[in-house]
Amino acid sequence: MRRSSALLAVAVALACSRSPAPAGGAGATPPGTAQAPAGPTAAYVSGATTLRREPTDAARVAGPGRKEVPNQLALLQRGEKITVVEAREDWAKVRSSDDREGWLRRSAVLEGDGIAEATVLAVADVFDRPDLLAANARRKIEPGTLLLVVKARPPFSEVNVSSGPNAWVLTERLATGEREVSVAKLAEKARFLARSGKPDEAKQILALARQQFAGVPLVEVLAAELGEPPLPGAVVIPASALAPPPSPSPAPER
Image 1 (cartoon, one colour):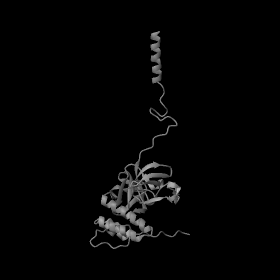
Image 2 (cartoon, one colour; image 1 turned 90 degrees about the horizontal axis):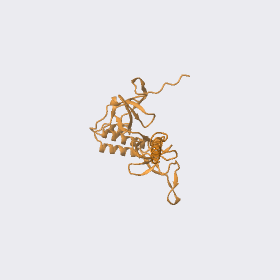
Image 3 (cartoon, rainbow, N blue to C red; image 1 turned 60 degrees about the vertical axis):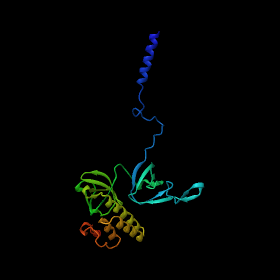
C-alpha cells in the first residue's frame, strides 16, 4: 500500500513538471495582465514646438480648482534634449532640461538610441539613399545647420534636418566638435527668431555667439545671414564654401 502511494506521488510530480508553458514562451505575461511601462528614454526636440500642460491643442485647460489656465508651459527649440516619460499615439509626456514635465506632439520628438549632434562647416551634398548614385542635385545642407545624426552606414550618415525629410550625407563632412555644434544651436534659435519677425532678438543671439565662441567661423556665417558685417579679424568661411543662390526654375512649356 505504501509502495503504491509513493508511486502515485512520483507520477503527480512528473505530470506537474511537464505542464505546458504559457503561450509566448517561458515567463510570458498571462493574458489580460498589464505590461510594465518602459522606462524614461532620452530624445531630442526636432522642431520649435510648444510644451503643453495637457495633451491637447486647446489654448486653455482646467487648472487647480477647475480654474482655466494657459495650456502653454514653454516653447522648446529644435535640438533641445528631453526625456520621454510616457508615449501615446499622438502625444508624448516629456521632461525638459529644467525638470518641467508636459506634453509634446510626437511628430516634434525625435527618439532613438545613439542620436548625435553635428553640423557642417561648408555646403554639404545630400543623397536620397546611402549611395553615390543617389545624389540629390537640388538639395544642399548649409554651413551651420544643426543636424541630428540618427544612423551611420559608412561612408554615409543619415541626418535629421529642420525641414524636409531625413537626408544622407558623407560622414566626413560632419563636424561634431562641441564649439561648432554649440554655434549651430544658437544659429538655429537666431533663425527661428528672425523668421518670427524678431530680428533684434536674433541679433542678441548673434552677440552671445560672438562672445562665447569667438574664433568659430560659423559665427560669422550667422552674422552674414542676419545682415551684420563681420568683426575685424574674425575668421570667415570662404565664399567658395557657401552655396550659390539657386537659379530660377525654367518656366514650364505651354
